[in-house]
Length: 181
Image 1 (tube, one colour):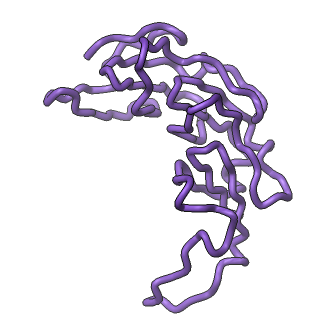
Image 2: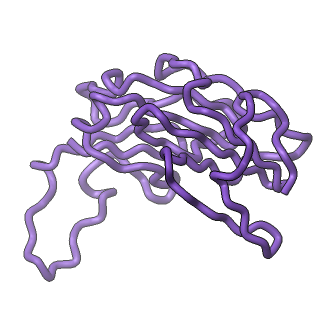
């Protein structure tokens, strides 16, 4: 089965055997036609196999800085569409990532605030929990990006025409303000 996580907090499960068979040069079939996913209302956040998810821990991060780690076995369900996470009003999922165990997480807000935390600080919750606050956001601020850095990985982002190396940010505590860049 293929797992499709969307920005509205939904999980769509699609059996590979249900996919229509086609020739190599064929255009293919829109995914809207083979499962309950509606491309007009929701966007993909993460696509992976159910076998990969079911034996791992899955990280969820939202625009309002809510974070949680969920055991992947909770997503092994019979329904084609199910709620993958609970969202607050006007919130949407920014990232869904399968964790290995030694990652750090960098949150970047719209007002150029950055906070790097260890993924071990994020508590494990059930899939229908909202989660915990990852970063204190100012009034009118929201997260724009959430980056997951594996140990030894280097990543740079551009902020105000200068490059910032995310792996060089100080590892702070969860639920703090972050640093301005």
